[in-house]
Structure formats: structure tokens, C-alpha cells
Amino acid sequence: MTDCIIENRAEDLPFSYILSDLLTQNLAQHPNKMKVFKKLEASVAIDLPDIEVTVTLFFQKGMLRLEKGMVGEPELIIRTDSDKVMDLNTVSIRWGLPYYFDEAGRRVLKHMVTGKLKVKGLLSHPVKLTRLIKIMSVV
Picture 1 (cartoon, rainbow, N blue to C red):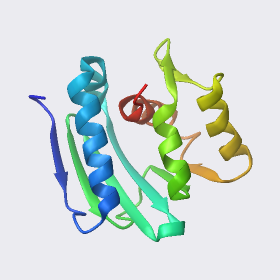
Picture 2 (cartoon, rainbow, N blue to C red):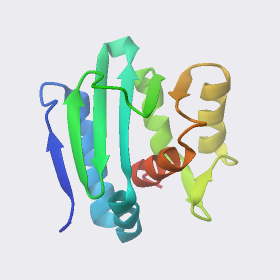
Picture 3 (cartoon, helix red, strand yellow):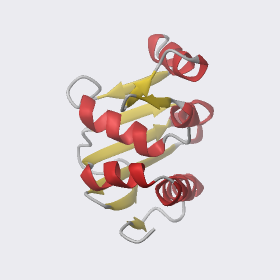
């Protein structure tokens, strides 16, 4: 992966390594994801209350910085339990968009409808959320 820079400033949180490794592998294996990564400018917090971990991701067109805790006012805040956050990685991408009509997609929608997965900024930043899901999806 030649043009990707990921800086992990949340090194004392094992979850930060999971995110960093996932993104590194996805971007290396899928050139189309690298194109999306280079377009993404967003701040995203992932809050996992069940394990008391929050990581803020700062995407800046081909660069990513991970910070410990909720830093600043992220545009997107994803709040869920640790066992559900990885379900976002299984959402398929079809026609350039997340596909919620297969088993994995319906599972994510169910988490959202039942309040087990909350995405603050979902309606105000749909393009950023779509790009995030695209680069994080392992499918």
C-alpha cells in the first residue's frame, strides 16, 4: 500500500490495532477502497461502552490518525457494543452503496432499529458514512 498513512495515537487500546489492521489490509487488497479512502475527509468516533473504549478516527484524504477517547466534535459517532461493531464490516457494497438487503445488512439494520447500534450524524453526513462503510467492509 503505497499512498496510505495510518498513525495510531491510541496505542494503549487494543481496539485501535484491530481498526488499523483491518483498514491496512482492506486498502492493500482492494484498490477501489483506496480510491474511496483518498476522498474521505471526516472525523468519526467509535464508542464501545461495554468495554469502556472510545477511539476517534480523523480521515484526511489518504491519511488516518487514531486518537484515544472522544476528541473534539466528531461528525459521526458510532455507539454500540464491541460484539456488534464488527457487523459493520460485513455489510456488502453493491452499486457503490452499502447493501442492507442481505443477511449481514439486515442484521445491521436490526441493531439500528432496536437501538443497539446508534449512528449520530447518519442523516447529516450520509456520504461520509457511506465512504466509511465502503473502506471498512471486508466483503
